[in-house]
Length: 309
Ligand SMILES: [Zn+2]
Image (cartoon, rainbow, N blue to C red; front, side, top):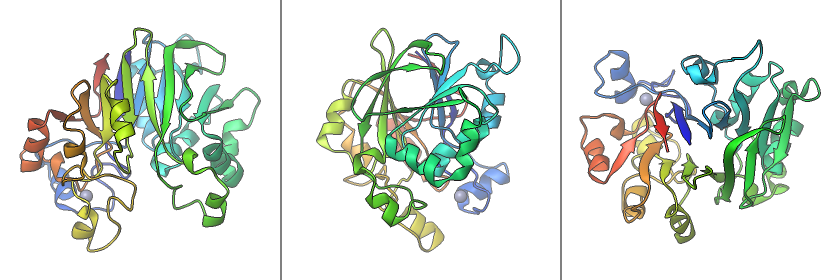
């Protein structure tokens, strides 16, 4: 399996346009001991020719331009991007779909609830279905494996399975609408498997790590895991108000209930923190927090990584 990390930051990117936190400010002065990052985006391929996107970030256009393997070839208007797996309705995960509206045939996998939110409640998404054969929306049934294939039915040898995670619908979905949607369709963890049985898990938002999820992760070779916040009250301390990480649907990295501790016994996968918020102190490669995650066997995902599984 070919895995390309196009972006590794949480929503807003790093630095974030309106943020003057210590991290963002020092990136702008060129003195930050770490790397800037665009918004979370991964692409996968089984053969190196046909690619599938995991989510569609608002930075997708520039992310594609710096990735030669995703450039059009074999003719005009022929992108090697065959489809998108949508695992939540979060804006930083779906806004990029609107950037793919130029009549490229695409398969878009999403749960029926996410498809209804996007296509029935948000008229702009009709731009993805201006002509027949443009976007082929295909239902994800949680926990049911399926082959990844483009709109023309061709695949590249990858299978996908999603795990429903306990979460709620994004804030732009009204309470009345959310009450009519299936709770198990709000957020999926995504597992991609190639023909040789190598498995990637893509989990940019994990509200909590239950024993069942831990068990699933024992079979994973490459884990991209929610690295949004270091601590539960990170945003409140830095901004002077707001929500906790848990309220925003993210398990923190640190603390007794945090992901470092909860996933410490997980031996098989290569463990990579992904979807990292600009406020997270572990972005600073001279920090204690960065040393802690390294000592625990974790890496921080970086834009531009190419991984061969
Ligand atoms: Zn910041």
